[in-house]
Image (cartoon, rainbow, N blue to C red; front, top):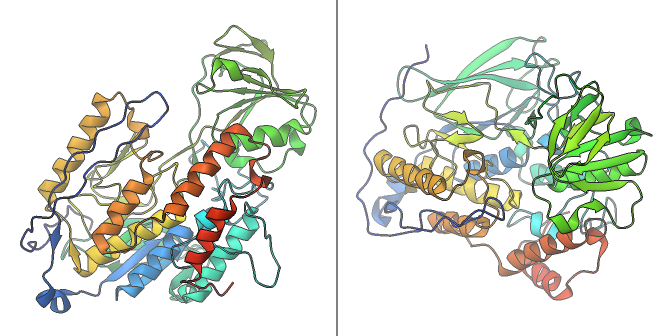
Length: 508
C-alpha cells in the first residue's frame, strides 16, 4: 500500500555557514535577472561524529544514461548499495541512436510504444568535447585513433565515451538491463520506497536475472534517484486553426534523416540547437524550409545567407483549411508539413508521491535546488532537470550532493527551510515575469549553480577554462551555426584543459 511520507529523523545542530540561495539567470534574453539572496544555513556533521554517522543505503537509480551512470558511481563511492534500472539493453540513454520512430509522429498518443531516444542521424555535439566530460574522466579522442576525433564529435562518439565510463568504473555490474520501471512509490513503514519494474525482452544484466516477457517484479529501497531524462515526451506548439489544416505534423523527437522531406515545403517551429541543425539538414532535400520562432530578431528574418530555400519568420499566426500557414508579420506559405522542434515535457509516469511532487507547466516541484522535494528529502531526488547547461559535469556535481546527503556526510536544511527557499525562488521568478516553464532554465547561472553544489561536498569548482570555452563556443554557434563546429580552436584554452586532464588520465 502506498501512503503519505513519514517525517525523517531530526537533523544535527545548525552551524552558521551562509551560502547563496538563488542564482541569477535570464530564461530568455528579455527576462530580468533574479537577484541572488541568502539561503538557509548549511548543516554539517562535526568531524568527531563523521565516521559514526555515515550510513550505507540501498538506492535505486532510474535510468542508465549519463545522469544515471554518474549517479551510480558517486553513490557507490559514498558507500551505498546501488541498483540501476534501465529499460534498454545497453547504457547510454538518449545517446543510443535508433533509426526507429514512434507510430504517432507528434508523440502525443499516450498509448503509443515510446522510443526513448530523440537523436537524429547527423547529430554532432554543440559543445567541444573538452567541456562535455566528467570532471575526473576527460572526454578525449581515443589514443589509438579510432572513433571520431573531432572536437565536436558525432553522437556515436558520445555513446562510446559513456560506455567506456561505465566499464572503467564497473557500473554495468549495477545495472539491471531491460527492466522498465513502472512504479515508484512510498511504502507504509520506515520511509522506504517500493520500485516495480517490468521485464522487457526477457530481462537480464548485472544485478538481475532473466525472466519472461512482461513479467513484473518489485523491491524495496531506502532511496530513489530519478534519472530518466527529459527528451522523450514532446512539447507541441499551439497553432490556431491547426485541426482543420490538411497537412501533416510531426515532432523532432521522431526526426532521423532528411530524405522523407524530399521536395516538400516544410514549416519548422523552433530556434534552439536541434531546430538549427534539423532545418539545415532538411534544406538539403526540401523544396522550401520556413523556420518560425518568437526568438528571431527582425534583422535576421528572410532568406538565409548561402541558402536558396531557407527562410526565417516570426511565429505562426494561424494555419488555414486551404493549406496555407500565415506568420505574425503577415507573410504566408502553402506548406506540406509542420515540424515541431519545440522541446520536451518532464514526464514521470511511474512516480507516485501522493501529490507531493507534480509537474505544472513544465515546472517540477516543489524542489530544493532543482533536486530534492523538501518533504521527501533526501530519500527522493531528481538528477539532470536543469536545461541550457553543460549536462555531464552538472550531473556529477548533483550526484555528489545526493550521495553525501544520503550517507549523512552532509545534512540538508530542515524541511521548513527548504520549502521557504523554494517558495521565495518561485516568488522571485513570478515577480520577474518568468513563466513556470523556465523554472529549470539555468542558461546564465549554470556555473554559479555548479560551484554552489561543489561547495556543499568540498568538490573542485568549475574550471575557468571550461567556463571560457563554453562561452566562446556559444558565441561562435550564434554567429555561424553552419561552421562553428569546424572553426579553429583556441589553443590556449585547449592547452589549459589538457594540462588539467593530465591530473585525471583517461584510459580511452
